[in-house]
Picture 1: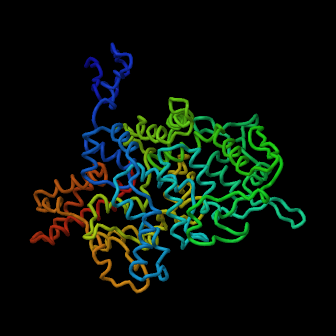
Picture 2: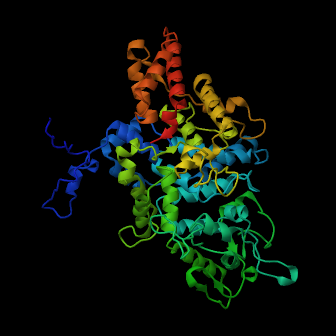
Picture 3: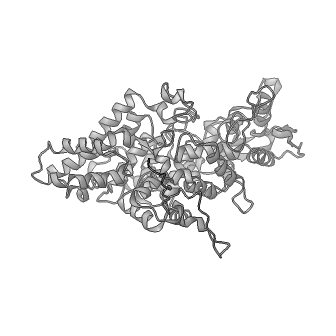
Length: 577
């Protein structure tokens, strides 16, 4: 009979419950010498982190994180000044049109937004800001599928709110979103007048409903860990009812265009979307407004609509639901579809107080999400309830970053038409205010049976799966990486022939020989899938590559492209853990 052997404890990799450690420096964190937080990430861990913290990245980015450390990299990204904005890029395309034609007539204004988004994201290195802004755009939704769909300023200027406030305060985001004309048009409260019973006219309730349901507190009262509070009958407690919607709708009256001569009517020009909505007091609902948790907006005399809105946004922002509600949505967009109550609680606590008494500090929330032990632990990657299906658009964008898409001109243009056609997804193109997919979506089968959710599967069907496979073929094999259309009517093709990008496969093609294919596949596995693609899958890919010629540079490039194609088609890549 064998005697029991003591457990082996691997110092520096967790599993040190029976070990105590102390330090003479009370401000230090000596436990970091035992857990994973005390060590720089290896390249696979750095790649895994970037898959949560960036829309796309390359080998240099991975090595930067590995050499810098995750927390220091986050701090550097938060401290990085925003390099530019989308509104100015849109204006640049208008100026280019005027320089060519002597007029703005004929400008393809509807595509300037897409061009601006692509140019910003392909040429700037504020990777974390970009990822958080996209996440916010899928929470505080507006869409080009709306009356302003052909107005690039409306979309670009709204997205600038999300970029500029990605590390700001959530209360400021609510303020700017509420006064932005794009949200006012999208949720129909621009030109929303006070009650007039004689005309059977009452305040529009759209924004009042969605600012509660989607942007702040959700449908049911929550504990700080995101679990629902229950009443005496063990039933969820609604956060608001129709009376609350009616009261909030009175608050969001009296707002209209800053450059409008009349209260009612549409935008006087495209430029109208660049200035906040203004309050016309004569159209704002007077009197008290009874809001949540017993709060009453006073009957101001004279009427002061902006003060009423400020009170209402404070009432929502300070509701205890906001921390867990918004924190869970952000965790789902960045890290995992099914965060544990403990994970939500830790992030919501950071939302409630950043450690310095500040509520709603987005920088603190983002750090709490990405530095949480669940996010960075190697163990999480082995948990089949952890992770998420990669969003189709993020997969596509990653191809361009991972293989250093470049142009002769230095300009990056992409209408993103074929992307949306294949996946039903590109920035600010949601079919409704409920985003491309809902946070609680459960596909039929094992996910539903286990009581889990998988939001991105709501846009995963035969069309989008086929679209992904066909898209990979077009981008990688055929080289049709982007869609470029005329900036203005009849623009000569020669004007933008240097804007077409090429992907750089050369660092991988040097390993295209049969006896070095394993090196190529390891590098691609690192950049694309954090090393998670299994040996059996890699062996299948290797055997497939060996069926292709390897006589010249074209053959070697073809082997690389096929390797990427097969790797990015695999379930091990598509599910990010």
